[in-house]
Length: 358
Image 1 (cartoon, one colour):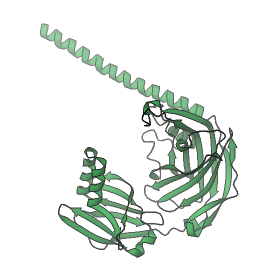
Image 2 (cartoon, helix red, strand yellow):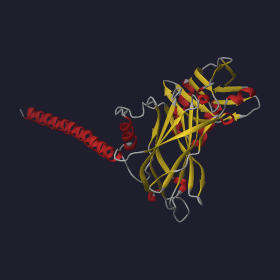
Image 3 (spheres, helix red, strand yellow):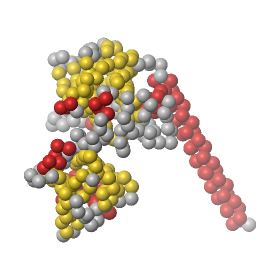
Image 4 (cartoon, one colour):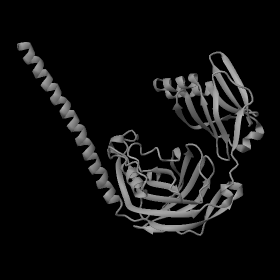
């Protein structure tokens, strides 16, 4: 009898714990939704200043320059677009900012959304608010809701790109200007869009103190918001920019342990999608290696070279599924004239095959 009472008590305690977990999960979902709605209500109050610009295609640069655009001023801060480059695998945009105060120009950041006339979302990126701990990417969610494309199950799945970001091209502290380049890589292939829209929002920067030895103290990082203003730039894509000439490549000779699923080269990069159990195993093991050793071993196993002996660099890469990997290399169509080769080594076996047009 006593044993039954103990079992009944344990059952009641377990049931109460399960109920508590269920209620806690429900509470988290409700509180998260409340916070998302609150952030969006504040976000949508700010209307973007809309500007339409004219693009002129420059063949030798494979890009289009913006004609006669002045800074669009808000809260004493100016923004304009200088140039756009677009092909099947890469979109680059140069954004020019003019500030009205002294800031840490090297850490200037912003959010952006790039999309076309059919609301194909090339990419949305929010500014990392250094020093502020946030549970979710609220700005990206708010921008998705503003554009009517919010996917709460996976907010990043709707993007045409699979990665990208921005970096400073030039900084003029005397003029208080910063030219920033947005560069995003296509997940598959960018469409032949007729219009491109670039929305800029949430300008800010961060500061960080140095310790007595002159090293940055990450405990002192501080986020500084500059403005909640939004800029929206609209451009018609030049016809020449939609005359794409992506070249599909293949291996002249098959290599054991390496299966190329897709390989293309454009004016900006070489993209290789392949399956290799050995290479993916090396990538998985990399987390336990010193960074230098890991990089060396990756290059020893797989590299791209040309007939003149140059070794091309991997700009970015990542796994894509079961033994799948996508690699972006800094080789371009101009390099095909030198003959490009893939080098693959497994154990003591070294293989080499030329990359040829399909």
